[in-house]
Amino acid sequence: MNVSNANDAYKNSPDRTKLCPVCGISLLNIKKTRKVGCPECYEIFKNEIKEIFKNIGVTSKYVGSMPKRIRNFNSVLTTRIAIQGKLEESLKKEDYEKAAIYRDYLRALEKTPVAGDAEVADE
Image (cartoon, rainbow, N blue to C red; front, side):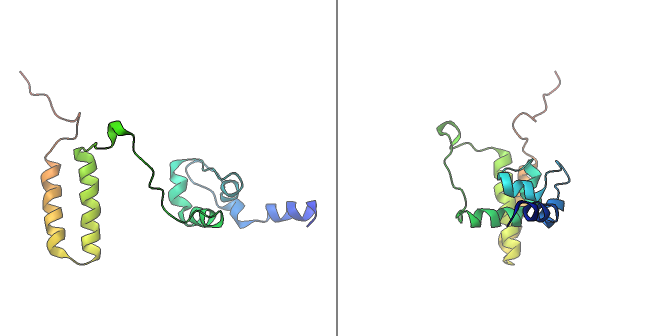
């Protein structure tokens, strides 16, 4: 392939026209640099990014490690997120009894303030 054919392929690539509506980066640019422009790119180009990872040999999820000082960190917010995920999974499996338990637990958590959100009582 000569240089002019390579330039034509670049100009006519459909990946060049797929843009992130948030930051404006093209899918072609992501493929070339292996860098996204913003966090939304991960969701917008989810399937394409998975394909890029597959092509370079990355096939498993990153499980990494947590810093020791926050390894056991747990808050109302993280609990809400975890329970919401379990609720959605129960609904997908049509396990409505578990889903009802998770729903009730989420309702109880809604009454618990997130750290820093607690209102100060008037004196």
